[in-house]
Image (cartoon, rainbow, N blue to C red):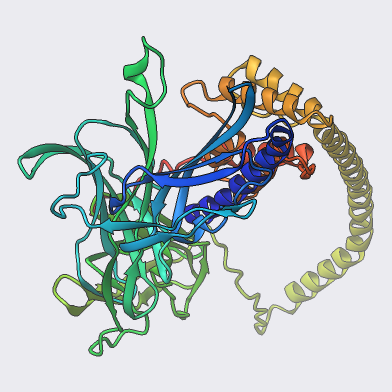
Length: 584
């Protein structure tokens, strides 16, 4: 994504330069009678791979500006600057412009900068040789370079590969912000890193900064890791700054790593599992909520089963199915998935929970549970097994079992039987009236309960509507650094409604300075990169171009404000997962 944003940025920047200088040059040429001229040059014609080169284009008394859009095909345009001047010579005013581009070559070998043309005048083509670091006679501009290493050259498909990005510098590096790489056909997860060490190279000491990433190839075959582009900044006393603060001046750089590749082999032929799971280690654990040797009928138990692996994402872990068991009701819960990045890779866990309710007394057997997985360290299939278990279920002692009534008739006791039958008849006659009275009392009681329930339901609905209405009217509070930043952000919204684009830009940068006081943000594009918003990046590019456009390039300040607000909400909602997985 970063490469794509940089490419768009180049195009918009060159258009902005073209339109601005075109307007200025027409006015200047009208005041001068000097012949026009156009020249192009570079600071050096041999460039070390991963380093930038400066291109200068100088024009005098021109009514046109050369088209520079073709530079983006062979270079990443890291920076562009322009300066305009008027010189008095022999009583005649001569107008001049100077364009300066910082270019990062995309490929090794010879790269030719095509001629530039303006007012029918063309420059000469410029050839640049891009050589590898260490080439004899090639002196590096900065002692900062990047390397990429892999812990494995060949893996199975979906097996973890740990990639390390090393950036070496001689102490001049001020900042570095490598993005998460985008590799086609590979899932990339960032791992803890950023550690430093000292290493000797060619008789010199370098600081080595390391970032690690877990790669999971999703297809078989050769996987290409493209050249990674790493932005940063270095100390450069000659690059801006005053007499007092000159030693604090910095220059932005972009360095490239070399391309790399590895092989992703298909699933192992010896695997017999239904679910392909190549990992370094796997544990299968279980836990009951109570002692299963003393269980009562109808008493619910909770069985928790955890699968923990090293070298896989949580989505790779298989679902565990429990078969239906006679005498037991089983209700599954929603599985919990989580991953914990470590320096050696991902530790992931899938946790399944079931509610187990015995339905009868006696011994109930639960079958064994097993998971087949491929041990990538030993390169063989293994099986984790949870042995079969037995529930010892007893009847509920409080459960009353009704006994059947048996009438026994014996000879010689007719009078007793007759009396009993008569009493039963009398009881039967008295029962309906008592039953009717009880039914009447219960009917009145249930009517009262029903009315109370209806009243409570109506009260709940009214309260919910009032709260919902109040929440809808309550404005969302952006979380800037302090009240001053919040006030500036509110004023920025009002400025976005006006058509004064320079004033909107001024207020936007004032708010950014309060929002991120420790950051050096010099343009709206830097704010978009800070929030990692591609849509905001493109809109800020159009906005910057509109400030210097003579043709009135459109830019929607209201849309910039909305995208900025959305980016802030997204950043504020992100919270790292604090739950740690159990140690393997």
